[in-house]
Image (cartoon, rainbow, N blue to C red; front, side, top):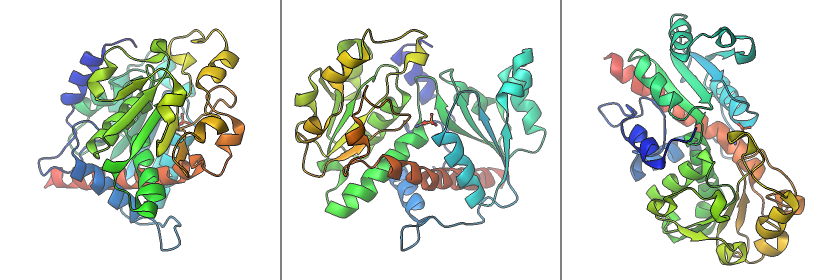
Length: 337
Ligand code: CP
């Protein structure tokens, strides 16, 4: 998809995301949510950890049917959504897209309506088309919720919220440093990354003033300045004195041909290495949404090193997804009254 940033922003603004009381009705993007709403998601996610930091189970989705529709590949998002649904006590159905009637030409709308007829209360959807989740939110009946698990280049809101939860748990609570005093660098293929867009938006809403994006010009979207971020083409300058470094994968699949002539040259110029992490603040967090390409955007020694919180991000993903689904289901219940 090559829709402009402007078009995608307009789509986001028209999303019917909130119930009349300001609660979440669908979870389509972090844009349009205010600081209090993002903090409420973090607080709710925190409530799913017991005193020793282990995830708990609840019955908030007991009797509800949640369907996972992953039209695009996923390891972390799909599995943590399912783990979250089971921890909330939901009935979980996974549509096997590869064996579905999508391959016989059935439209997304018809697939949705047929699955809704099977008494679904919530759909979790990942799709390669930007705007797919928004489209579905306009097509379902008012008592059904849509959760965006990543749409094209556009948004990956639960990834952004699990990233915010990770920063909150690993930095804000441990160092007593609030979000607005943090400096966060996002390194890599910003242009094709829905994670970068959602992270930039969530960081900004939570008050982070120093958001840096680091990439060669060819991997920066047109109009990046409008996000209110500081742009660096030199990684050593970009990561200097930061509290958090978020690495991103080169998204070759989004344009159908390799984005880089040489991955080893890219690693030399933009790879997150031990010497570059040493330029950041002592104990700065190293994050990555996964899947990682070791030796392309990140060195193995950094990915597996003491400052890496990459696997903690995955665990936090379960809590955030529990929070978002429980809040959306509550929003749907309000709609019924
Ligand atoms: N971070 C992320 O979205 O990973 P998956 O593609 O494995 O879900």
